[in-house]
Length: 100
Image 1: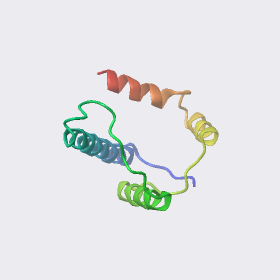
Image 2: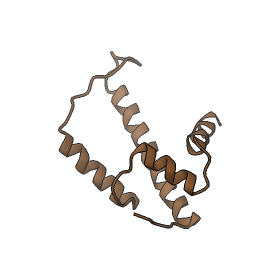
Image 3: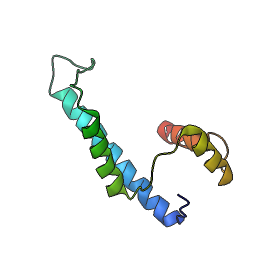
Image 4: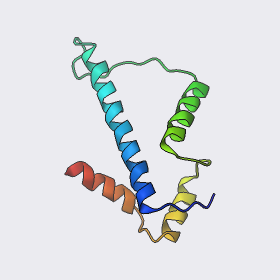
């Protein structure tokens, strides 16, 4: 799976992911507000079957244009180094964005 993307394509993918995160945060906020007795305490959720979750993620990734099989952490780190990224560069960028 050696795919090359332009910065424009990566930007579009990132924007889609960010929109999904906003949606998930809104859904979590809604779930918390539906149980006023619970306040900010933990809310219990029913677990669903693994195949159902896998199918939902498959559709999510398909909608975001993410293709291919997942790679393990070690392979991902090797791919990042080969692409010229420093170790933890992406996670540090996420952390700094959260702090803004």
